[in-house]
Image (cartoon, rainbow, N blue to C red; front, side, top):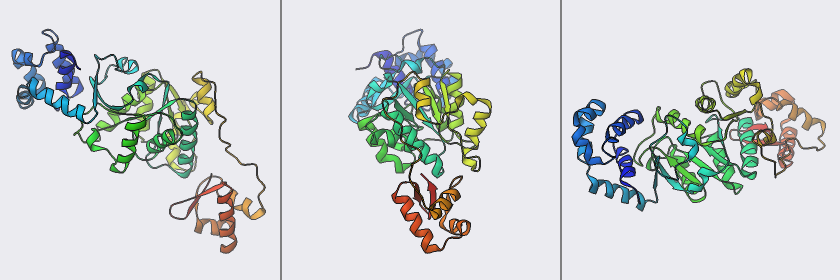
Length: 362
């Protein structure tokens, strides 16, 4: 199933060795062939790279143990796609910090599809949630594979919209398959393995850390043909993905944020320096990527008649979501009238009710 050289790459993932150190070890072993028993002849050089403790672990793992490790992965339907394998994504091969091994569950053919990464805040506003839902849905319906990081918020919404609209999605994890984070997304991860592709550069038992999350963003950017940021504050991890995308020469797309909400400050800051990245509908992205839309975009504004009280409510919700209490103070409507109007506006799809008695324009 795997060549001896590929097995050597998989063997390296069994130890807590950084990508940089792993590459240094491979450079040493390459002179003799990537056979793991060759580490004994280069003991001193390898100890200088990883230290005596990890070196001791390395010499303790022979080929029989490695084969058992690989068989265990296979029993869990985990495929190891090494950088030497023909299935390794060509887009990822182009970057300097490419993973030596990708642990994969699902449809490997998605590596070869036209794709777009959708990233943003883990705590979107009602506006950010709605925008992400619309863009992810329509891009998936236009045969773009949606790539994201399985985090809460924008990531989760993007994956869910792709799946619910019979589209394809790739989730790039910041840890191993056995340590899904957040745990609430475990069922979503399983659904992605059945209908899409779940990948990680970390062996299954590795927990995600504050380092692995931003580092995995290079994979999200590299695998995509473009990166869409739907909503992000100034210090969002999505901005790391944007920086990687710029380095790799990918298209950047940014939806303008609500200027009254700090959750859109990051996206608006990008647009001040990259005005050409601004998109307000999915067609902006599709045409830039050379794709003729095959689906009509969802109407953003309903052409319906509203009475004066409903107009007052819609005006109050125009810029930012509001609580029931705030709406009562702003509109000066009697609570019974207000509740009746809110119910009708929800039924007609003009507004939505969020947790905590919060209302937002749809």
